[in-house]
Length: 425
Image 1 (cartoon, rainbow, N blue to C red):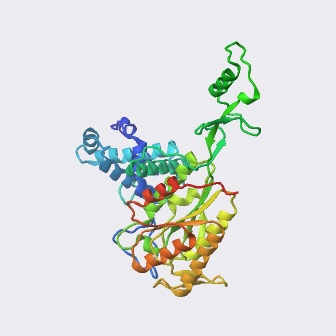
Image 2: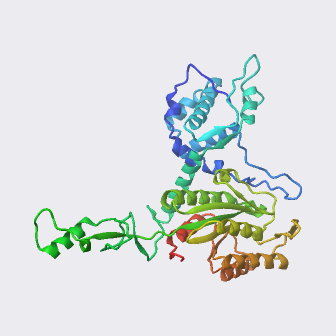
Image 3: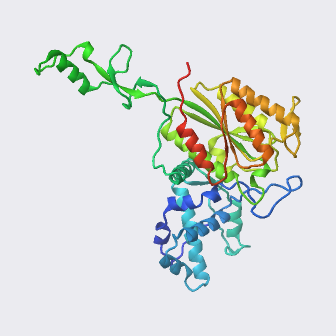
């Protein structure tokens, strides 16, 4: 990546840009899922078109975000536009370079190669220049800081769209002595956490003695403690469908699913520290990915091996000791693949193959026997698919939501926040 210094450029232009607002506007670009827009590719002959993560593409995305968000004030745009000559183009290029540098220095982005300034008499500017070649070769990646920020912004957007300004913990009807005094006061019993209710304790002593003399005569029976609401712990596996259908028919369904996953991650980390969230991608097979790899996950020319995804999710959940275990599955297609005992993948692109369906429902039944609820969020409304999802819900005693990319996050977060559970002994 190249950085230039121009004597006619005012450095305040880049400093005036709100980086967090810019990052929020870049969310779709940073979380792109390999969606090729209107240009379709054949999943059997063509290579999947992954997202361009070069600095050249990032600069163009920043420019588009600045224009669309209105951060290009008339004064800034006037200064950048100038006379439309080479000097004006250099000013704009320097502004974009400085914004990328600020994002890197403040820990939102990281580069896989250090910036290099071309030397010698070779051309730097233009699409054939060394600067453009360097921009294409240097790749960028998101840091944990930017992933957490995008999760926070996604969460605020989703909660704001459903009229919620705050969020809290899982509610249960159980009370226990603890640090948070959300419940009623009770008389202290041996073994309780000494979360003393001073006012109630002193009142009990005054009622018993009828005296205001100091020191106050306290007895064991005067002690009162505040009860805190019992907070249930929950282990969640988020299953994301990365089959080819998630970007077909002119709609990118996977990018919104990733935003919901980041929002759920931020919610759990900040509000439910005792909970856990794991991410499983299912396609021809299934694999777990770390949350740090979620932004770069992409769809591909795959089928839908739902059974393998459920099997992996169940294994991950059974290794955790939590009050609740649940699978949140986001998909838009029929199960069309199955892992055979010999390890080979059986595929039927038509979907609803009797063998595939029976094995998938068997895994659903295994989840129920293990006490794992399956909540399915379906991004399609095909009649045969609806019947299959209903069958999954009946077996697992979970819920099925038929939604779209606009309301997916609302359904998932509201289901998560409203869940009422009890401690499993």
